[in-house]
Image (tube, rainbow, N blue to C red; front, side, top):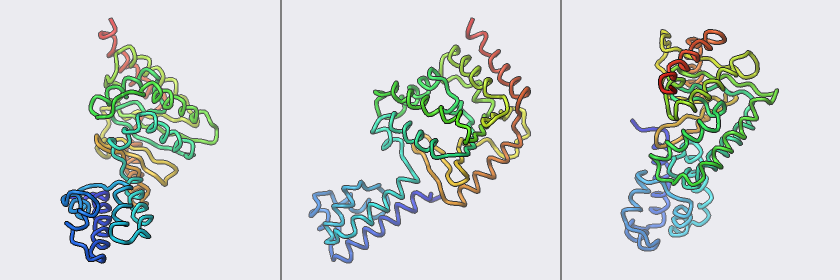
Length: 283
């Protein structure tokens, strides 16, 4: 199945081919003019490779249409806004990713999220956040050179939780309470942090228990910002989706999951159960 990102990259490739054809240039000749292997021209035109900004500028100039550079770069920006590969994002370090999310948090008045595998970043302790970022870095090529500054950036953005004009509604799968992406002692402190947020208020925390008769499968985690933007991720990329149909789909999924959530004392019992499961490891 072709994804929206692939469709967008194919569309950009078709536009590049159009410019080359209008210039009367065979692919081999354009490649020679730009100092590229011919295979690169082919991959870009067929949507098999994502171009860089410099690639697009060179293409516009090489086809005699420097006036199209801004258009091409705009298409790329739109593509990257929706689909942000971790390889590209982490090339600038982990701190820049956290700062981007911090900026989005400050622009959001109402956030709803579902987290099936980890405690939400806005509720993480510094120690838990450090363990998560460090262990994720093991599968990415970017070196974890700035984990400490990334942790501080993640913790700093948690100040939005106490701003009275914002509303947060977190749904957490029970498995996230028991998963150990960190030492047992760190998880124990993290569970206490989550428990401290169970009281009613502008921050609401619900737990989706293992025993729930699920309205929909748990699926992947996501957050909905002001009913206008969805942020979700996979192992290789993070998606920022603002298409109304995409937002509506995630809204339906969130509401179905929310019907399975428990709150207050029932949620606290699940946290206590997860905490007790750590006792053997802490002995």
